[in-house]
Length: 141
Image 1 (cartoon, helix red, strand yellow):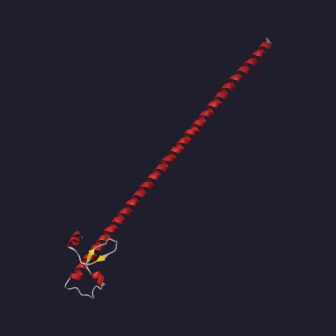
Image 2 (cartoon, rainbow, N blue to C red):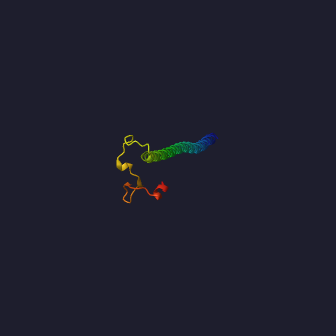
Image 3 (cartoon, rainbow, N blue to C red):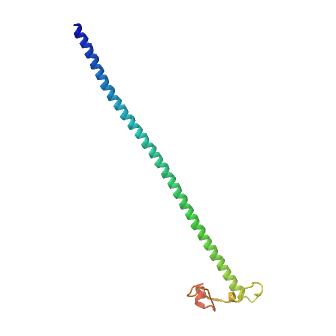
């Protein structure tokens, strides 16, 4: 029985070693796959955070551009209104100062061409045209 005991012990050690190796290989593979999945999950979380940061930055830039464009348009509108006001006041001043009986010719030195009343602001060829003013044009102004 000595031989059988010896064979039994070797068989037991062999089976135990084989089972241990199988379980170890399975656990090693399982843990390796779990580690890869965890790393992938962490990478995805990092990418999501980066995309969120880029999206937030893009929205801020778009808002700044929109605000700057609005401010530029508003400034342009105000400049045009100011120019229109100055043109209107200048026209009013010139109309009244030339036709005013108290007008002193040397006070505002205007060329004779500028002292003429304007028939239309622009002629058909796009240039200023001078001449007598008509009632129709005066009413539109």
